[in-house]
Length: 320
Ligand SMILES: C[S@@+](CC[C@H](N)C(=O)[O-])C[C@H]1O[C@@H](n2cnc3c(N)ncnc32)[C@H](O)[C@@H]1O
Image (cartoon, rainbow, N blue to C red; front, side):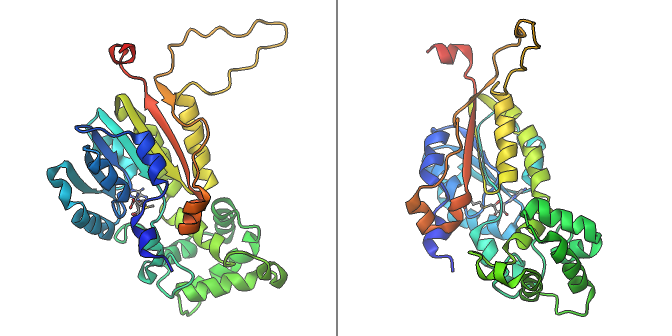
């Protein structure tokens, strides 16, 4: 059960606030408003924030709790994959704390949870796209096994995929508890007995990532967001999955010129670079992770990885 503190206290709060270093009058975009925890801190620092979320319930709750900021806060129901066309740049900061919120995970009717009975849905935007059950029905067995292996790193993907296809095609009941039991039954008993998490955890994670095209949305964000930043502007991204963190790490490395230079060919001098210095600086040489106290308070923070990038200040500012 997730406690109140977990719901309202945003992940990696201190590190986010230190790297964001928001100042009065700055314009920020929070791409994943959620409950508005991070946004509340940006607003308290005096910034104006546009908060995006694709979940109307999250928007409504955050909007109510952020009323203290008056017209410095604006909520927008949107997928952050479209941020470049939704927001007028230049802006001073962009924040994304991607994935689902603890609150979404804990609502049985949203279908994210294997521990409570609900519809096999898993859409963050409950009015758009196909549900997890529809996805399982549409994909071939091989495609489904690929989704489980790639997005869930599930070693038993090829056993689970046919069982899920049979579950989705059968008479039901088609709910999350039944689906979790179907998945659990696919694992060798000895393996299931020694697991530290529910045997269906990886499968649920994989289906959720596929249903919401989470990697596609992140790729679009990484493509479009940096160009929105004003000189000195910061971009902070928190991810919870190694596939996501790798994308953030590589994009930030490329933007800040940290990509390893090409090795010189044998007998030739090293290539001479006449490129301009990179427009961005990496603020986090290594991903920032939660400390033990935060993980104890909020176990979900264990897999959080925060990376940040800054557009180089204009020459007059950097000389100052
Ligand atoms: C981890 S929560 C964010 C929590 C927030 N930082 C806070 O302090 O309360 C992630 C939120 O992002 C939203 N979200 C995830 N992917 C999204 C996307 N592609 N576009 C818009 N919102 C998204 C989810 O609906 C969820 O409300």
